[in-house]
Each structure stands twice: as C-alpha cells, then as structure tokens.
Image (tube, rainbow, N blue to C red; front, side, top):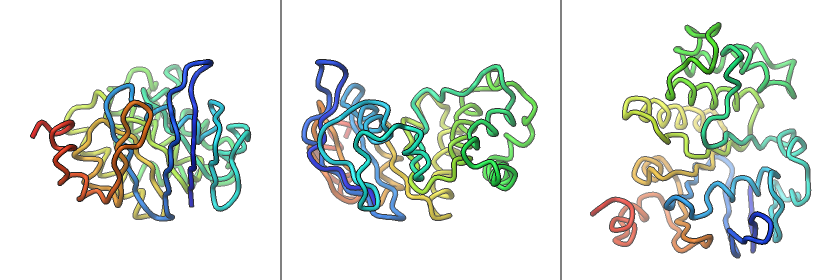
Length: 231
C-alpha cells in the first residue's frame, strides 16, 4: 500500500531524515518508534505533503512526491498530528464537520461512526473543543481524522500527555479502527503499547531506521528493551 524508498527530508538546510525505507501493507498496523527528536513526526509530515522531501513515496503504486497535502487527503491518507490541533473555539460537532469537508455526502454516517467509537464525544457534542480534557481532545482529533474516510491513517503520538486510562482508550480505538479495514501507521514514544498492537515496527534513531521486525520481535529485542523499556 505504502512504499518509501531512500527518503530524505528536513527543514530548510537542516536534514532530519536520511535514506528512510519503509513498507506498509494494506490492513496492517505499523509502528515507528524512537526517542523525542528522532524524526518520527518529520516522517509523517513528508508522507502527508506538509514538508518537501527527496526519494520515493508511493501509495498504491502511484507517487505522492510533490502533491499538495489536500490531494493526498483526497487519495485516502489522513494525518492526525501531534498535539491534537483541534479547533478550540468550535464545538465537538463542528470539529467533526470540518474533518468531513472533502466528504460531505458521508458526514452524517461518519459522525455516527465516531460517536459509536467514542461515546463520550456524543455526550459532549455541543461542548467547545478547547474546554475538554487532553484525553477527550485526542479522541476528538482521531474522530476528526476518521471523518476524512481514511484508507491509511497516520497517527502522531496519540498517547502523548494522556493518563493511563485515556491511553488505554486510545489504543483500544486504534485496534477497532484497524479491524474496520483502515491501515494504520503509528508514530509513538510509548514503545510497549504501540508495538504490542502492531504487525510490524521500525525503530528510528537520529533520522535513520536502525531496526525493523514484527512487533513481538522488537519487544523481545535486547537493544529495544534497554533503550526504551528500561529493562
């Protein structure tokens, strides 16, 4: 579904990613894990067209290079950014409707889908996004992403700053989303939980992929245990 070859990307003259190679098959959950500043968010921004890159990014055998971000969304790749980035002065329902801008005929069906996945959002549908807790805002950010009818969902640090309770809710929702047919690329510092639900994973350090394997293989890897799991 997604194939990345020799990807290089950064900001201005500052390189961040170097010779990245990643493949994601339809139906998978694939995690990219690493420490803060390793290049995880930059990778998602390159895929979704927010920053320019060199190398090859192919989606269903078609190049995404140099396509504007909204065209990439239209093709079925939806990016839920780090820090949630909801519209704080809009209600839950208004945030969701904004997420469905490119698929207006499916808005009502998708709203019901989101409310089924996150019943708390249904209860808070009239509440302003900025007055909600961090966990509720993260649910809203994911829900807004689902309004775009994603075939490939890019999730950037969905558990960042969340309580253990909300972290469990978010990871449970990711599994449910994937079981509905959506492929998921998950960028996370929460290595244990992300690899536990992933078919495969990649470990990134200073802009380079240094390890790859199944989720279980990486969790059992001594270097991963030492670097990320404190074992």
